[in-house]
Image 1 (cartoon, rainbow over the protein chains, first blue to last red):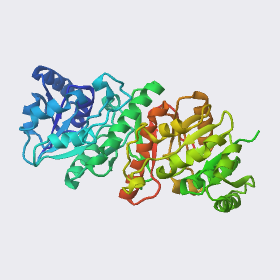
Image 2: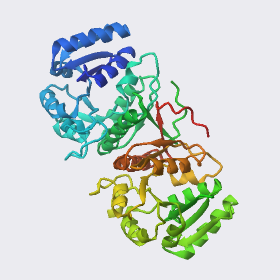
Image 3: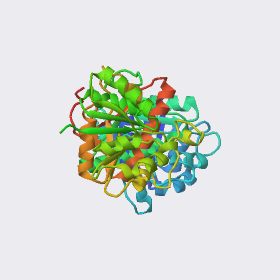
Image 4: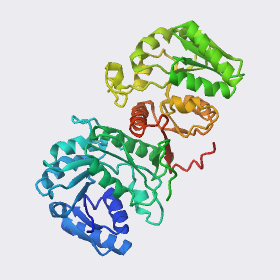
Length: 229
Length: 229
């Protein structure tokens, strides 16, 4: 059976970048947005770019209700509100992937800084707000939107993945590895998500400093073998 | 004139690993310790391994008083006390490189977790305790002791460097680049040191999870060219 992935906040840069890559990999991709028309327009665009006819646009709750894996790619300022709007719509046994980076810009600050959250990380905040039975995994923070959008190029970055459920992490790892160039690395329990969130902000800081738009991160020395784009 | 580098806490794993590499690169290296005899023994060992006769052991304050660049490699639990013991001994215009990783083990916790410090990072804590006129740079957190000790192999890791003074960062970058395999990356102001400190803890977590002892980190997409070991 074909895997169904929903991108909540799928019209944003990060969400549409991931959607593009998963559509290219042949998955059925549901683009979720608060605005149905924007979601549908983004879906048409992605379908046209990838030749994948099974990309459709939906209101966020509708997208969530159909997907085995739901990926949340919204700004921190929208994370809590969005989770509250979708929490009763998950399929039983669904996986929620949180990719929220708690950037200081949410409170008018800088994109190269993070704020500390009471729960320890944005992913743990998502876990607190997720419905029972939905397993939360933190992933995809490091894969920059600009790199994701260059469909003809592999992404020169590892996907670090945190979560408390091994099966869920394995499922998200499989998803990550569908993106050419990306290796999936198990970075431990969900509480380690703060490392991923902070590393994403570090990459943003490096983008600004080096005047580039898609720095990435590779972990060496894990014995995972060469990167094969 | 030959550059003189002091390692405060130079008998520890990280300090002696860095000392080994800098001695191999031909620098004059001062091994500092609270215990003079341990410092002298470590210095003899490093001199023998590298064939560099200009490696000597000292009490920490004595090492600091002679060096243009002082690198602090002590556990978090010893950082404040050590800084207080050396603060009146710096040469005018010296650079203090802080490599402290604020691991939770300092309060009986885990090596894969960090604690949050009032100053924002261990490096900013060091800056608060440093004497006037001494410029503080955060660096070397990511270069694992085990990788540093394998003198016949390049280190497959970038050195991320934070600081508020450009000249000091340039000096520390030059030092980092003396280690084969290492690229120096400017990671912004000193306040960004928290990213480096947390990334070091992430690498420790990955070492434990993947049962390796020298994971490292590379930044991609900065246009710095290939790594030439």
